[in-house]
Image (cartoon, rainbow, N blue to C red; front, side, top):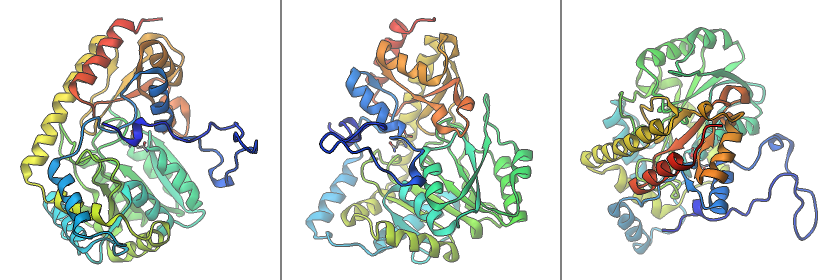
Length: 409
Ligand code: GLN
């Protein structure tokens, strides 16, 4: 099967000049500090070294037939012109139905749901549409790479709180002291990439009461909500008093193993949806029409689909986690997502980046260094992330390679 994620990206390395014109690469100041994303870098290295890719989080198996059939049917039915900017009405309704089923929260599909091109666009539209230059936004590190870049495009001032092993608990006192009168929002991600942590009800309640007390918005990235294994996933928007200050961000990709479809959405009360939609109108205007029709069919899948997805992933998690323990890593519990984080220090390399380089070149397995998810790279230097969104054969092969070739220095 061929996917974009296994193809070479046409992105030159920083500090190179372009081949034909020998011009130095140019980028606006607000994006100067960012590099080619770690996920693309690592997937390129995987191809170069013939390594097994447990780095970038994309399944190496396909999405469900009924969803693919729905997309083909939509194309054949001529659903091929621009969609309505805020989403094909049937998809807005399917998202609202799903949200009610999952969280108990009733939303107006017309006024409170916006369909975007993946969750990454939903994040960008929310930041660009609701954050003013100079506003403070609080992130919890390690955090997904697009948050910082998008906040930087919005001109926000980032404040960062580090979640630390072994349990990556939210330090509520630190959150309390980080909030100032300039704090506009906090961005949380549960289940959490890269750690696999699921925010507990106590943590969410504590964050919620600080946000209410200080009039702070919450952006919540819940793209792994259907991959909550050992604890229930709780949506921030379902807590008392929180819907009116919460933008819930989600997508189709992880739940339906269709990461290349790029269908996402933002759910928020009308006064916040306005800002999200204003930014969305001028970022992408509308999202692929036939894929939106198929997404509506996907979200109306029977309960058994979601139960099977979860049990399949629990089996994959067991293979990888047991394997990594047998290899000799200290493995942190992954309660949700399709990632697991380990402490690589038993193998004696200096830091996470050096470890990942060694792992690709000498062992033939790709992992992701977690320092790239941190404002302060020191915070991630002992940890690396593996993904288990791969077929069982691939997971077992990666474990075998590590058992055979990963030596303690
Ligand atoms: N969300 C995926 C991950 O964390 C990567 C997505 C991307 O490559 N931008 O691995």
